[in-house]
Image: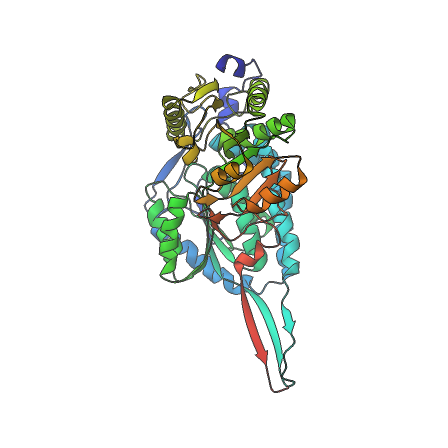
Length: 503
């Protein structure tokens, strides 16, 4: 399989892959409208996951710098909350325009620090910018209410007001989009923010800070405090416990989310979280198998399987099981190419680090030891230490690790099932429920399954479902609240009831 996956293509030179746009490359924290070093001048390295080479060293912020950022955000909130919705809209739109103007440079930064192929990186930038555009428009649609009450001498009003300072903690797999999806809504609502990006991918957050500065976003409204993995727990504690913080928004693992929730509980802060997933992808006998295989490829192997809504378990009904596995295997051989994200024909970049590769390898070995069969891939790629071949395995059971845990890598395990009821039971057996997918051409079955799947988002005959206009979020232990869409702004607003009497 690896020989097929590495067809000749235009290879990026070392200098091409490692050079970053000087106009947007920043390595200092962005606090109160200024670029600041840490108080002890410490830094941490950012690596290219494709080559393992160091890209740049970034300021390593600690609790002190984090508190300074919160203070700056709290000070800025006093004026930002009173800025008209139209002016906030204009500023967000300027930020969006600058992202689009600089999309190629921003994409290069993503590919360098995250590893995803250039085409995917460009797609992320357009997607990320779309949240700024969307919330620029939603800023002017934050409405209150007038409620009719039985007392003639009173009027009842409902106001929507910004929560205050919002702590924004984001992951590495979408280093731009996970920021704008949160920050766009926060700023539209009148909140100010402190962003702690993932230690693997801080350069995208800092590039966005540079563009926010150019757009005229006032000092202190958008702050970024990068930090190393070692300092992350202490910084996270400040972001979740500082009295000036009114809201916490986090995207990451369920385990980390639970820790942050415990911190937030002491001061009862507003919290929204998008946590782990374990997405099922069900293919019923009634499905169009060709379309299901194409949807499976798109859903599983985007960003080398490193997204929270990537399919983690394929459930295929016995009548079309063999046909589906064969078609998906052929598509993988035809469409997927492993290599450096800067190479023009690559579709599968590196995993974020060697720990991620180890997990995929562990899941494959566990499955094979229990009787699973490797159809395609099944081993580390010789491209580099952070690469793993796109892998398809069949004869998978629900007892195997890959069917019980989120792999977060390019592994597609296929479980055969008999009845609709069995598929629903397997799909809903997880304690998380972010996204789910299924393919069927039976209208009655479509309604039944869409309603019964215990997930926050359902793709029916579609493997890609994210859109700025639609609510993103999960149920059970996959999180709290929704991002994107008209509902995303509500996460940053308080509802105030005003009883106006004596009329």
